[in-house]
Amino acid sequence: MADNDSLSEFLASAVDAAKKAGEIIRQGFYQTKHVEHKGLVDLVTETDKACEDLIFNHLKQLYPTHKFIGEETTAAGGNADLTDEPTWIVDPLDGTTNFVHGFPFVCVSIGLTIEKIPTVGVVYNPIINELFTGIRGKGAFLNGNPIKVSSQSELVKSLLATEAGTKRDKLTLDASTNRINSLLFKVRSLRMSGSCALNLCGIACGRLDLFYETGFGGPWDVAGGAVIVTEAGGLVYDPSGKDFDITSQRVAASNPHLKDAFVEVLKQSE
Image (cartoon, rainbow, N blue to C red):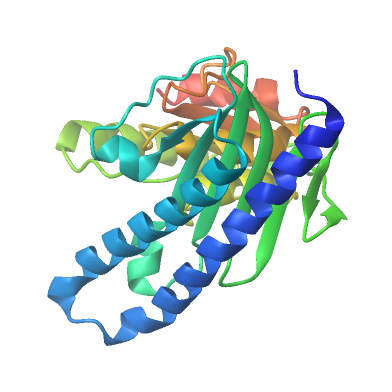
């Protein structure tokens, strides 16, 4: 495992990269209002790609021996196999649909795994200027202030976040809406904010009590947020209750009080 000094340095480097990418997102975010419809997808892809290139170039100069996994490089046929090597896992723009619509829940997510364990996490929303950070064993922070998960212990008083996902076939949609229907009887209310990474940060700072999502893009959606939740005193796990696997495209998160009850209602809702 890397020592504390190098972890702090890794975090500082990731924050620098996230802020640079955030500047590109912020500029694009306010320009999208003037874009022709046919250009919307192109614009987002360009912003995604530009941000990923910027982040990887920044980190590769500093850490030439580290490995890199990014949403855009993977989409373009790059390698997404996670090894024990220090590996930067990056979502250059999480919340693309929000970005297109000018809905201010977008972020840059940067995670560093060492021996496959999420160790450093940065999630930055450049539109509302919130920077979430965490280092394994060192706590989690929002704009430099310590954060912790909620102390809620009752499902009925809990705020639940999930996402509808991108698939629109009847089988998948029915399964996810049926599950949501059954969960709505058990919790206070539901949010779908459109960013997996920001949902995890919502758990970490106590804005949200419960979160689950299945079938999201890949490890880049959760690598940064997982560290931040854990360091804020929360738990990240598989919706079945089993251990979290960063490569599984399945995630649940909550404070420790709610985990057993949440897993139980998730099972009932299947």
